[in-house]
Length: 152
Image (tube, rainbow, N blue to C red):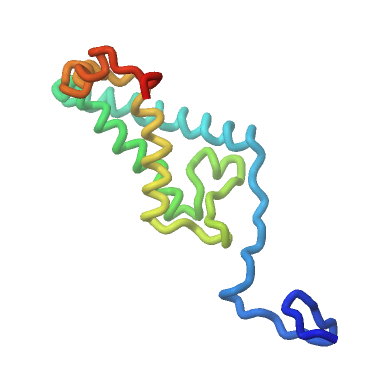
């Protein structure tokens, strides 16, 4: 009998240390459940922003377009804080009994939760963003001077 590493000896019952074992593959929620949780979360955010606009109307009008940054920070907080401190659940995920975990089934660290939320909310924040400043700057002039990706 060879001592080949790929050969498994049935009499040997020693297990590999925990640090070298593969993580247990966790089930991933179906696409439509995740979309439904996101829709519930967006409705919750809409309610939050509605009440903020009622109580802080003059402040929000005074900051003008910078309000997008303010809204972005609130949305990031809405997703990052509960994902870290509420067992990986926002309101929508809790309603559908979904959780956000790492590959080992543990709750995300705040750093990972924040990064995840920034990526998620960036997509929403850039929707309808006025990029006229970009196109009137030096780089925008570069694009408007006839630069084409096809030329590369």
